[in-house]
Image (tube, rainbow, N blue to C red; front, top):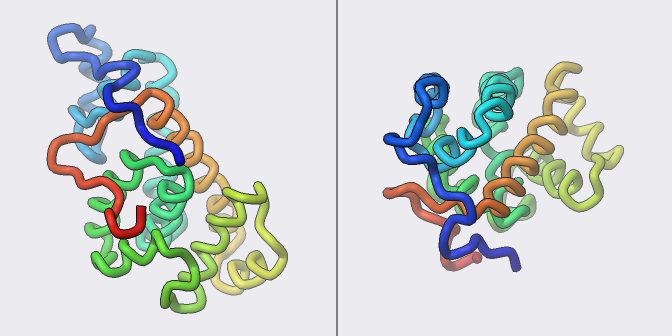
Length: 187
Protein backbone atom coordinates (compact mmCIF):
# COMPACT_ATOMS: atom_id res chain seq x y z
CA UNK A 1 0.00 0.00 0.00
CA UNK A 2 1.34 3.40 -0.99
CA UNK A 3 1.55 5.94 1.77
CA UNK A 4 2.46 9.58 1.50
CA UNK A 5 5.60 10.35 3.50
CA UNK A 6 4.86 11.86 6.93
CA UNK A 7 6.74 15.00 5.93
CA UNK A 8 7.15 16.58 2.51
CA UNK A 9 10.19 15.47 0.56
CA UNK A 10 10.12 18.87 -1.10
CA UNK A 11 8.51 21.55 1.04
CA UNK A 12 6.17 24.20 -0.32
CA UNK A 13 7.96 27.41 -1.25
CA UNK A 14 7.30 29.99 1.49
CA UNK A 15 5.90 33.34 0.37
CA UNK A 16 9.02 35.18 1.51
CA UNK A 17 11.26 33.06 -0.73
CA UNK A 18 9.26 33.36 -3.94
CA UNK A 19 10.53 35.31 -6.90
CA UNK A 20 8.12 37.87 -8.32
CA UNK A 21 7.52 35.60 -11.31
CA UNK A 22 6.77 32.58 -9.07
CA UNK A 23 4.32 34.67 -7.04
CA UNK A 24 2.68 35.96 -10.21
CA UNK A 25 2.33 32.41 -11.52
CA UNK A 26 0.70 31.27 -8.27
CA UNK A 27 -1.75 34.15 -8.53
CA UNK A 28 -3.05 32.67 -11.80
CA UNK A 29 -4.24 29.50 -10.03
CA UNK A 30 -8.02 29.41 -9.82
CA UNK A 31 -8.62 25.91 -8.42
CA UNK A 32 -7.79 25.12 -4.78
CA UNK A 33 -6.15 28.51 -4.26
CA UNK A 34 -2.69 29.92 -4.85
CA UNK A 35 -1.46 28.78 -1.43
CA UNK A 36 -2.46 25.12 -1.89
CA UNK A 37 0.47 22.83 -1.16
CA UNK A 38 0.39 21.31 -4.65
CA UNK A 39 1.04 24.67 -6.30
CA UNK A 40 3.45 26.10 -3.74
CA UNK A 41 5.49 22.91 -4.03
CA UNK A 42 5.45 22.62 -7.81
CA UNK A 43 6.29 26.30 -8.30
CA UNK A 44 9.83 25.36 -7.19
CA UNK A 45 10.07 24.09 -10.79
CA UNK A 46 8.61 27.30 -12.13
CA UNK A 47 9.17 26.75 -15.85
CA UNK A 48 7.67 23.26 -15.76
CA UNK A 49 4.73 24.44 -13.65
CA UNK A 50 4.13 27.35 -16.03
CA UNK A 51 3.74 24.84 -18.91
CA UNK A 52 1.73 22.29 -16.87
CA UNK A 53 -0.94 24.65 -15.51
CA UNK A 54 -2.63 25.31 -18.88
CA UNK A 55 -3.02 21.58 -19.57
CA UNK A 56 -4.51 20.98 -16.15
CA UNK A 57 -6.79 23.97 -16.61
CA UNK A 58 -7.93 22.76 -20.02
CA UNK A 59 -8.78 19.32 -18.64
CA UNK A 60 -10.71 20.88 -15.74
CA UNK A 61 -12.73 22.90 -18.27
CA UNK A 62 -12.85 20.40 -21.09
CA UNK A 63 -15.58 18.62 -23.00
CA UNK A 64 -16.35 15.97 -20.36
CA UNK A 65 -19.17 17.11 -18.06
CA UNK A 66 -17.84 18.27 -14.66
CA UNK A 67 -19.62 15.54 -12.68
CA UNK A 68 -18.22 12.80 -14.95
CA UNK A 69 -14.78 14.42 -14.84
CA UNK A 70 -14.73 14.38 -11.05
CA UNK A 71 -15.82 10.74 -10.90
CA UNK A 72 -12.91 9.87 -13.19
CA UNK A 73 -10.41 11.95 -11.20
CA UNK A 74 -11.58 10.67 -7.82
CA UNK A 75 -11.35 7.07 -9.00
CA UNK A 76 -7.87 7.74 -10.37
CA UNK A 77 -6.81 9.33 -7.09
CA UNK A 78 -8.17 6.31 -5.24
CA UNK A 79 -6.51 3.81 -7.58
CA UNK A 80 -3.16 5.62 -7.27
CA UNK A 81 -3.51 6.02 -3.49
CA UNK A 82 -3.00 9.75 -3.97
CA UNK A 83 -4.63 11.13 -0.85
CA UNK A 84 -3.92 14.77 -1.73
CA UNK A 85 -5.52 14.36 -5.17
CA UNK A 86 -8.49 12.61 -3.57
CA UNK A 87 -8.95 15.30 -0.91
CA UNK A 88 -8.82 18.23 -3.32
CA UNK A 89 -11.24 16.56 -5.72
CA UNK A 90 -13.70 15.69 -2.97
CA UNK A 91 -14.11 19.45 -2.57
CA UNK A 92 -14.36 20.00 -6.32
CA UNK A 93 -16.69 17.01 -6.70
CA UNK A 94 -19.08 18.41 -4.11
CA UNK A 95 -19.02 21.75 -5.93
CA UNK A 96 -20.19 20.07 -9.16
CA UNK A 97 -22.97 18.13 -7.45
CA UNK A 98 -21.53 14.86 -6.18
CA UNK A 99 -23.04 13.83 -2.86
CA UNK A 100 -20.97 12.57 0.05
CA UNK A 101 -22.54 9.14 -0.48
CA UNK A 102 -21.46 9.13 -4.12
CA UNK A 103 -17.96 10.28 -3.24
CA UNK A 104 -17.70 7.47 -0.71
CA UNK A 105 -18.91 4.96 -3.29
CA UNK A 106 -16.18 6.00 -5.73
CA UNK A 107 -13.74 4.16 -3.47
CA UNK A 108 -15.85 1.00 -3.70
CA UNK A 109 -15.72 1.06 -7.49
CA UNK A 110 -18.01 0.52 -10.45
CA UNK A 111 -20.20 -2.11 -8.80
CA UNK A 112 -21.23 0.02 -5.82
CA UNK A 113 -24.75 0.97 -6.87
CA UNK A 114 -23.96 3.28 -9.78
CA UNK A 115 -26.15 3.85 -12.80
CA UNK A 116 -24.92 2.16 -15.99
CA UNK A 117 -22.98 5.11 -17.44
CA UNK A 118 -21.38 6.19 -14.16
CA UNK A 119 -20.33 2.57 -13.55
CA UNK A 120 -18.78 2.60 -17.02
CA UNK A 121 -16.83 5.77 -16.23
CA UNK A 122 -15.37 4.16 -13.10
CA UNK A 123 -14.70 0.97 -15.07
CA UNK A 124 -12.83 2.99 -17.71
CA UNK A 125 -10.68 4.60 -15.00
CA UNK A 126 -9.96 1.14 -13.55
CA UNK A 127 -9.09 -0.34 -16.93
CA UNK A 128 -6.76 2.52 -17.78
CA UNK A 129 -5.09 2.18 -14.39
CA UNK A 130 -4.74 -1.59 -14.58
CA UNK A 131 -4.36 -2.31 -18.29
CA UNK A 132 -3.32 1.05 -19.83
CA UNK A 133 -6.24 0.80 -22.26
CA UNK A 134 -10.04 0.58 -22.38
CA UNK A 135 -11.78 -2.65 -23.36
CA UNK A 136 -14.02 -2.77 -26.42
CA UNK A 137 -17.11 -3.29 -24.23
CA UNK A 138 -16.37 -0.26 -22.07
CA UNK A 139 -15.46 1.83 -25.11
CA UNK A 140 -18.73 0.92 -26.82
CA UNK A 141 -20.74 2.12 -23.82
CA UNK A 142 -18.72 5.34 -23.60
CA UNK A 143 -19.15 5.93 -27.34
CA UNK A 144 -22.91 5.62 -26.94
CA UNK A 145 -22.87 8.84 -24.88
CA UNK A 146 -19.64 10.70 -25.60
CA UNK A 147 -18.61 12.37 -28.84
CA UNK A 148 -15.18 12.03 -30.44
CA UNK A 149 -13.64 14.93 -28.51
CA UNK A 150 -14.84 13.51 -25.19
CA UNK A 151 -13.56 10.04 -26.09
CA UNK A 152 -10.11 11.51 -26.78
CA UNK A 153 -10.21 13.61 -23.62
CA UNK A 154 -11.15 10.75 -21.27
CA UNK A 155 -7.89 8.76 -21.39
CA UNK A 156 -5.91 12.01 -21.44
CA UNK A 157 -7.74 13.13 -18.28
CA UNK A 158 -7.11 9.86 -16.46
CA UNK A 159 -3.50 9.77 -17.66
CA UNK A 160 -2.91 13.35 -16.55
CA UNK A 161 -4.20 12.60 -13.08
CA UNK A 162 -1.98 9.52 -12.90
CA UNK A 163 0.96 11.85 -13.52
CA UNK A 164 -0.30 14.28 -10.88
CA UNK A 165 -0.84 11.40 -8.41
CA UNK A 166 2.68 10.09 -8.95
CA UNK A 167 4.12 13.56 -8.43
CA UNK A 168 2.10 14.25 -5.29
CA UNK A 169 2.96 10.86 -3.80
CA UNK A 170 6.65 11.02 -4.69
CA UNK A 171 7.12 14.57 -3.41
CA UNK A 172 5.19 13.88 -0.22
CA UNK A 173 2.80 16.78 -0.73
CA UNK A 174 0.83 17.06 2.50
CA UNK A 175 -2.88 17.76 2.86
CA UNK A 176 -3.79 21.42 3.14
CA UNK A 177 -5.50 22.51 6.36
CA UNK A 178 -9.19 21.65 6.29
CA UNK A 179 -8.90 18.82 3.79
CA UNK A 180 -9.88 15.30 4.81
CA UNK A 181 -7.99 12.34 3.43
CA UNK A 182 -9.32 8.99 2.32
CA UNK A 183 -12.48 7.67 3.93
CA UNK A 184 -11.31 5.62 6.92
CA UNK A 185 -13.76 2.76 6.49
CA UNK A 186 -12.46 1.92 2.99
CA UNK A 187 -8.75 2.75 3.15
